[in-house]
Image (cartoon, rainbow, N blue to C red; front, top):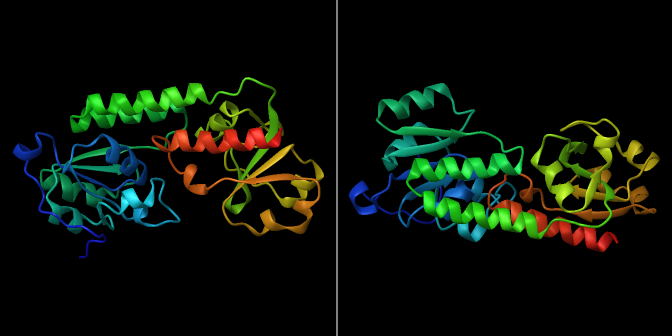
Length: 259
C-alpha cells in the first residue's frame, strides 16, 4: 500500500476539527471539498487530481493534499470519519469501509447547473460546512448570471476526445448555451456522447468548432479551410462545481472572438 502525494500529516481528531475528517475518492468532489472543508479536515483526495491530464482543479492546489489510489487499505490507513466517492465505488470497498465505521457518501455526474449546486449543498451538509458550501454555490451562481450571453447565438460543435459531441441533458450543453452558442450537433439530432466524424463536420460546418482533447481529426489540414476553430481544455469539462466559472469564462472568450 502506498500513498501518492507530497504531504503527509497525522490525521486530526474530531475534537480538533469539530468536523468529520474526509478522504475523497472522487475527482469532482476533490475540487468542491478543497474549497468548503475546514483546514485539516480533508485528509486526502483522489489520485486523478494529481494528474495534469485528469485533474479538474488547479494542479498546485491539488498537490497540497495527499492522494490515494482508492483502495480500502489506503483509506483505512488514514482513518477518516467519512469517504466521498462516486456511484461506481466497488461494493467490496464500500463494505470494508462501512465495517470499519467509516461513513460513505456518493455523488454522481452533474448534468446541469442545478445538479452541481445540489451536490455542493449535499456535501456541505454531510461534512458540516453548510455556510462555506453556500458561499461557493453563490459564487458559481453569480458567475453563471454574469457570463450569460445576451446577443445572437453562434452555432457551435463542442468536439471532444474520441470525436464525440456534447448533447442535450449535459452540463457541457448548458455551458455552451449560457456562453452564447447554439449546439449544431443537437440541431442535427445527435445526443450526448454521439460520434461525429470529420467528414460530417466539413460537409455541414457550424460557425464555430470548439475542440477539447487531442484527436487526429482536430488537426486535419481541411479544418484550416474556412472553419473557425478554438480550443477548450478538457479539464474544464470533467466536473461541475468550481470548474463552472472557469469553463464559462473560456467559452465566453471564444464567443467574443468568434464575433
